Amino acid sequence: MQVQLIADDPQRAAALRARLERLGIAVAPPPGRDGTGPGAPLVLLDLGGEHRCALERLQALRQGQDPRPVLALAGGDSPEERILALDHGADDCVGADVHDAELAARLRAQARRRSVEAGRRVHCGPLTYDLHERSAFLDGQPLRLSQQELALFEALIRRPGRLVTAQALHDRLLSRRDDLSLNAVQVQVCRLRRKLRHSTVRIATVRGVGYCLETGGAPDAAAARPSAGAPSAAPAPPQPPARCGTASNALAASMRSVNGTAASFITASRKARGSS
Image (cartoon, rainbow, N blue to C red; front, side, top):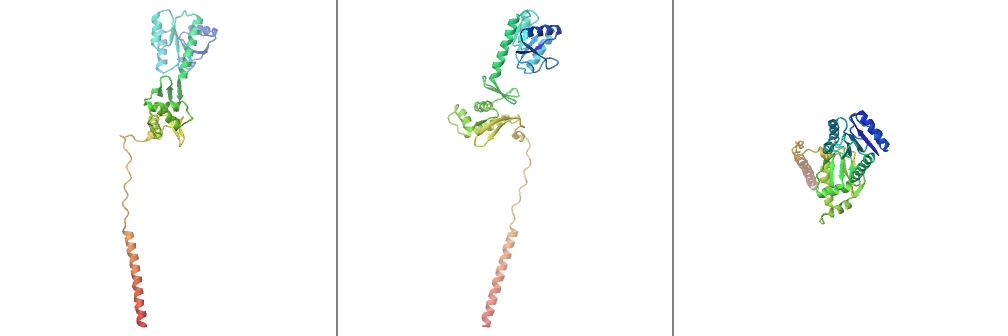
């Protein structure tokens, strides 16, 4: 097990580091100057130094949407200090005189809790799906989906990068309504695509087979389409109707040629009869 230690007082930090190492718990180096940011899966926050500064760091972790469990170690035995730590986002708080075995047990409990919560969530790029709560998130923000869109979303995000057949999606939608055709899958896919069009996730179509949730590409081209209120490009000017004068003239010339030929033939025939 590994923890990230956040402590302002150097002497207390050294003492806590040695205490954790005796318990077989590794201490990860802080990734930043303020000791915040991604690091070990657990955080041990010491409140024994600058109390207000420690609470500000704790609040910064939570405001930065850091999901890691935080065990706060109070500087004294005052219940007010532990209450403040819990109210500022700590998952647990113990007093300074906590026994080593209890401290290790509480850290293990937080590690188990994180493992369970991690198993509840499925990720695909900026998308997250909570299997227990049945809620979807895009870039950490809730994604509003209808029940049918959510059923489709769940089926696709459970198999990111892999094909899900249209029939399987239809069967999932059919479990909620018994009057849906395969065309309903296409309708729901189109609706879901619109809600994901500004992200790097796209729903690829394997024509005649099904769909696949992919990530890492550019936002959907549909996002570049002008909105209803945006000015659209000027339509091409209508082409004038084809003029028929040329054809009429050609037809008239052809008729004159035919008439001239016929007149010549008649004149020649008369002359032949007269000579005979």
